Amino acid sequence: MTTTEKAIELRRQKPCATLLQIGQECGVSRERIRQILKRAGLNKRHYIVRRQCIHCGKPLINPRKNYC
Image (cartoon, rainbow, N blue to C red; front, side):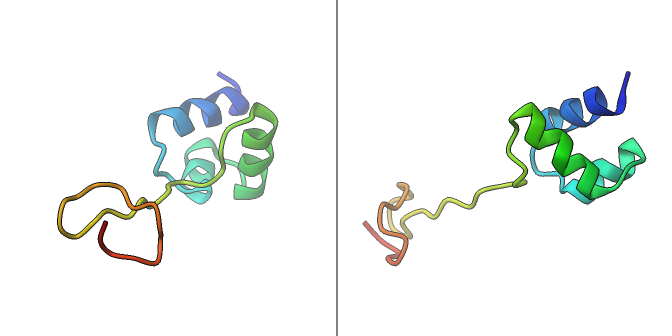
């Protein structure tokens, strides 16, 4: 398995892993992982935080509020 294939597989298996963590497992730098994921069309961000209403738990439309 090539470094590129391994990096793409690790991103799909562990979406919360950072570029540094993936790079350490593949044996390359985080910059090389960023380049590989960019070329493959995968998101380089390891997670997206979605806020929820403190009363009902529904996703918030307005990020400045804590409730629906």
